[in-house]
Picture 1 (tube, helix red, strand yellow):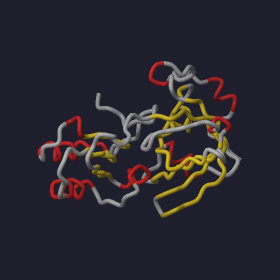
Picture 2: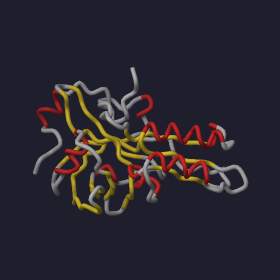
Picture 3: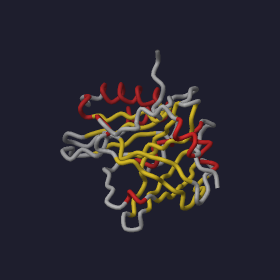
Length: 222
């Protein structure tokens, strides 16, 4: 059994999320234990986690949990993963995680075994399905699969598909998930097709050629 961080390391962290205030006030601290870990495909790992705090826990489709996967000195390193499913009665939360690199999050995911413990915070995320849209369009790369349950291609194929796909009548809403550059391009393509910024929910999960920042989001350009 190998916990993400031992108790001694947890106590030494300079943790900005030690107090769940501000934008985190509506989240819950989650003391997870790994129930099982299964490879679904060569690039997709399914983890099932349990925590006592899942009793009464709820989330909106598309929201995620933030896991404390490692530390750099006394700085916490977190990664965010979309919630695939929650069995509240059994206190089981399922994450389907794409494996596409060798960062601290992926190293923990690959090594996670039954009984391992890891701290989390959730639910996180502002993007969920729009209640006022007449139709919904989901476009994303493989990292978006847990959120959209759809198989898609590479960045150029996504942009080409967005340019050609037939949009239904009415006022719709598009959800754009995946690599940062691809998401930015998708916003441009759909804006050219007449969608307003309030009709698009973009979410970059990762940035090509660079690791995510310690808080789990893609690193921003300086």
